[in-house]
Image (cartoon, rainbow, N blue to C red):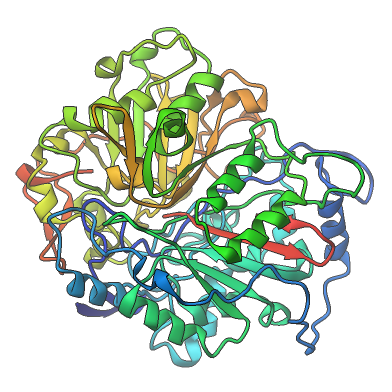
Length: 597
């Protein structure tokens, strides 16, 4: 591994994400949805919301007082998991069958930490939930707290930000090194953990990798001794390191995600409305029109982990009916029959068939994919990308016919020039893991690549770690749907058919939320011209796509950055090139019985 130092701090580059997995996704971005409609009651929030959110509004006027008493004895769904036969059930740091030796990959995993905000290729423009908990501070001495303050969002009124009337409540994380106006409407993880949302009782964090000390510091001082459950995918040396890191924090317990299929990863994120507890005796299910509650419970149940059973019970007790997005998850396994429709790209296909509206001349509406890592997809496009996967993405309504080959496909992945001119320079490529071994086997992918450009959100020079997919109109002024997810472009994340198409095999845990116009009473979404614009000239329902449309195709001299031998970053020649938060998920329960997901 190589140590680097520059204007954004000292950090190391590692190669923990090979082709088929989405390894070192450093800043686990997040997609967020919060209550959106407004209400005009005097002294109350200006949008329709639950009693829990109204209570939080009152807490803004009377903030929580700091107390030195550590009420860790409060009821908590977080219990330390017993070690046992699951010791070897973890994930293997490799993303394709021809990647690095396991020992080297594990060493690389240890090196995948970066100075938060000031470090290298952190997924700066995560969607909504705040920066991930795996970006530890390094070698900054007394300047550390100042650096964190720069992007922590503590200077802005979080409540006012969430009360601006955005019907989607889709946010980006704050980025250091860009103009302040582009951070004014962004969030930091400290904003999400703010006492404004209530008095925290306990929380659960799902992530690809953790820096425990850094994560604990993101909690307000009065909440730093509250129970925290970390759901991870580490094993062997990486797991031992995490256990050692958590040991000084008596309130932190661990839960290992089982990854029985080789090359799988644990990767998930999202910010929900503040959910109220269901009043006893009302016989309400608390389910939304999008079946979000049932799908979330199914996803957590797939872990088959005792510590999460209590979180499932907690979710059952809360009202999630305000949710207006659909959950799309992946869990490791082999699925047949109707079970195929529950996970991965088949889940997306099912939802688009049932809830998306048919569009005239749909074959001219391109599919756009944007991500930070690429897996092995075969010798040509027909093996997976433009066959089963694209068939799922082009589905629109029950009457949609197979026209995948006619639909344009635009894949957005930073070019070498994007990386060179980024905030961190070439080291930013460390968060864009794509091995040369895999790239050389799929030269055909280069023709689909488009440059990264995000002037609309002020993030053209911040290398993306967000993952998004959408279906845009020919003039890119409208979109038929939008998905923000932890899933990169890989069969491991989305699933691949086996046994003559009768079985779907998925290696990794992934989580995302799908925005469909029908859930907002619309036929399609208008694309917002400027991500942070509050212009009254744009429709209130304009969707804030975080990068520029239309995407620009790679030029003749453009190439993408690949990793050689897992360590070096090089500019791949045209012949060997390829192509919104890994997702960062957390859940919390507050003392007034409300829940934030």
